[in-house]
Length: 286
Ligand code: HMG
Ligand code: MG
Image (tube, rainbow, N blue to C red; front, side):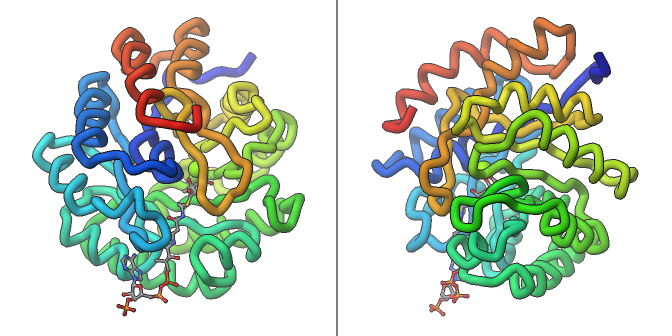
């Protein structure tokens, strides 16, 4: 079996994990989660989103969370859907930013009020400004396998966005199974084709667990050469614009699988496992 010696786990619990929670989670609770995660040894944590508070109220404290992350001195990623979001992230001092576009236009219209082509135009401006400010840019392609509004998503639709992201100079391209309906075969095929087309690009796997295949999908992506994965502590998560989708693959499950297979992550397994019940206690969905 072809496996990497080490893998980077990027914790997305504070952002993807909490964004869809219907009940208010206080800023203090979010800070506690982030501080405890920071102690477990993550190189990067996706902690907040500079999105419109009207659309995603749970992320309305993005400025305060960024300020806290700066005080902790951690390396964190903030979601920036447009130029306005990026301006807020720059002012708040976020070191890494994440843009996101769906491979399906139907999803983009729901998620960010724009078609795929218009989203890409806005993205160019975001890339330009982020580069001027020396930001590391993570570029998400959501709905890279299936979409709740259109059904199957073709490889060409994913590649249409990926090609633009690579040309714009993304530091990493994050392939999202937002819907959580992908299976190991399509994951292996899609990542293998992307890696053949863009051998110098760093790809990240981002799997939601709706159909309970996210661990299998993680393994399939590793077989295709992927060495970076987004996970969420306690399996929290979901996207407000992906109805029915459940949380991300649980960090503790991925860590157990990787450590049993002798793959290093640099994370403290016991610390992470101890944190999962606290993370779950913040959620009404897991
Ligand atoms: P919009 O309403 O279409 O924006 O929102 P607009 O450009 O028409 O502007 C309207 C007003 O909003 C203006 O204010 C703007 O300044 C303001 P006014 O002039 O009327 O006073 N505005 C903002 N305010 C604060 N922050 C901003 C911002 N932008 C405009 N960033 C927008 C467009 C994209 C902002 C909105 O649709 C939005 O916030 N959507 C939320 C999308 C979201 O957070 N989705 C979930 C994350 S994606 C995900 O979960 C998938 C992922 O995990 C990967 C995977 O699983 O595949 C990443
Ligand atoms: Mg997600």
